[in-house]
Amino acid sequence: MQIFVESLYAGKIQRLEPEGQPTGFYKTSINKADINELGIIGDRQADKRHHGGSEKALHQYSLDAYANLKKRYKKLAPQFIPGSMGENISASLMNEKNVYLGDKYQLGEVIIQVSQPRTPCWKINHKFHEPSMSKFIEENQLNGWYYRVLRTGQIERGDRIELISRYNNALNIYQFLRIIQQHRPKLAQLEQCLDCPDLAPEWQQRLSHRLQYLRQN
Image (cartoon, rainbow, N blue to C red; front, side, top):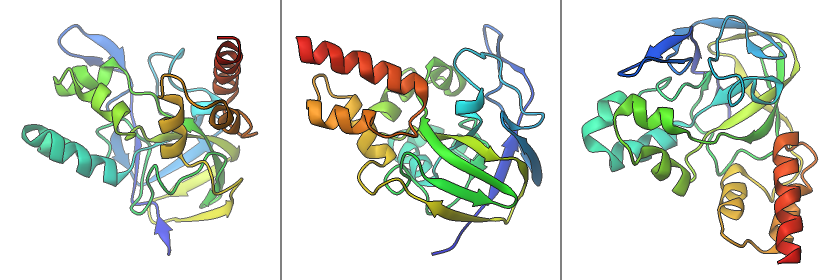
């Protein structure tokens, strides 16, 4: 099964109506991108606390997730097009159930690694004028995922996405989200999430604190 980069997206800071909050949510299709350790050179994020950085250098959103959103929000279906969730990469045949934490992929000259799922925020609701959307995305594990960059270079549309290595076959993005979203997950499952050595440090710290709490309560 061969997978290719179907689309690439980058954006400048714009205003989110009607209040006018700054956002990098709006992306434009590009044919190629120069990648450094922070992602696509020229792609901007407004909220540096929650977006961007080396552990969220590139974002991918699955086409399967868009299909689910179209079924749930039929009136908004024309708006659910690749790039509209603020992602940088779009490719068929990749989704939360077949992408695993720690996966390493080569795209053109670049090597990237899955670092964490995306956490949907209020800006999704704001952009699409639908207050239930971020909750629906989270409850159905349609989050998308982030990459860190292991080797910089250039990516072009049409580049093959080649899986280089997989940490294990037990913890895909969907399974990770299902575990952490439980009110009281089994300790062994939470330990499994925490034991993934390539999970972003912020998540490791968060899960470590949660595991400690659950052990004591």
